[in-house]
Amino acid sequence: MPQRPLHFQDALTVAKQLHEGHLSSLEVTKALLARIRERQERLGAYVTVTEDLALEQATRADAELQRGEIRSALHGVPVAVKDLFATRGITTTNGMALYANDKPDYNATVVERLAEAGAVLLGKLKLTEGAFANHHPDVSPPVNVWDANCWVGASSSGSGVATSAGLCFASLGTDTGGSIRFPSAANGIVGLKPTRGRVSRHGAFPLAYSLDHIGPMTRSVADAAAVLRIIAGPDPKDLTSSVRSVPDYLAELSRDIAGLKIGIDRSYVSDHTDPELTEAVGEVANLLVTMGCETLDVTIPFAETAGGWIVTTAVEALDAHRATYPSQRDRYGSLRGLLDLGSTISAQAYMQLEMRRRELVGSLGRVFNYCDLLLCPSMPLYAPPREGEPQMEQAEADLAQTMKFTAPFDYSGNPTLSLPWRAGSKRIPLGIQLVGRPFEEGLLLRAGSAIESERGLVPYPE
Image (cartoon, helix red, strand yellow):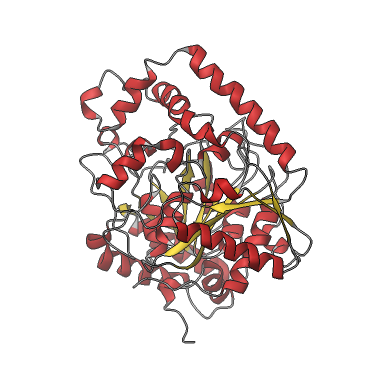
């Protein structure tokens, strides 16, 4: 099989060539910048390209690597981040016209950690308005590189497109109700939503304070492990971040998965789900059995929690926007509907959902007494049409079904991993999801890597 073009290689493959002196960070960065210039007009993944900063960081990385100073597994590798992470002196729009000229005077913790790891920042990636459902009316959604008529996912849309299209080697997204997993599944890449608290949220513009997660979006499971190793860990600037030590996730990938118990809720997986995705889950389950795993029938408790997601999110988003809403309501797009809703919700309604959340956490904990991982699709729709089409408007109206595989695990905080499986009838890879116990990202990644190694390389778009 011919070698993949440079821009479609995995981040760790590129890093190895950099660290062994076969490539320079500067030449790789220039190649990616040229590709961005070539594809940006058609795909629209970037809000801001930080060319000068990228060239400066690449030059510094080459000098350090030549001295044998390797800061991390991704030292010298060009990456990009969703445009709701604060970047010192660089416009951070949060997907909103309100912030079109906002330049923070500090870096988000995850941006700082990428810089400390020697990664090269190519720029800031497009997202939906305030990280909610749709893009602001002044913003053209990015284009799915597999099929321009298909959805790119919300809200980390630019992260999904840029990583899939070879416009960066890895990216960061955020997930409040599925916004790492939806664009990962829609664009045929790997998306990891870590345990809540595993990654600091300092400097990330919030959608819903108690639901927001930050994680990597990559072209391989090993790349996701490498990025998580860099960005995870306690942060005094975010007191909700966990003080647990950060494992060497890459080292865990080589461990055997034989003996793992994989839980599957058959009705959860199949009801109101595209049959191709249900079939894909069955295929993955069969593969895992051949690798020594055992599948168990389980019941996912309170999956209907997804229907209450809009209530929690509306209340918490209203608080997040208190400085500009309703005083500048006319500058908002469809996000104002969410904020209007938030102002009508009673404390009792919000508290009832918080009680349900605690029940969900307890019930899921009991399920994990019997199994090590859960297996389900990443989303119930396969290759849905692009934003604004009737099917997507219906999906937005029926959140309980659309978010049934994602929102419950934002409520519970459990880590999840979205993986591309084989290509489906529309040529786009099918997205499947593994769910783990809190802070067991290493196990998730190990199982995901085993699936990936047996599946073979997913085709890449051109």
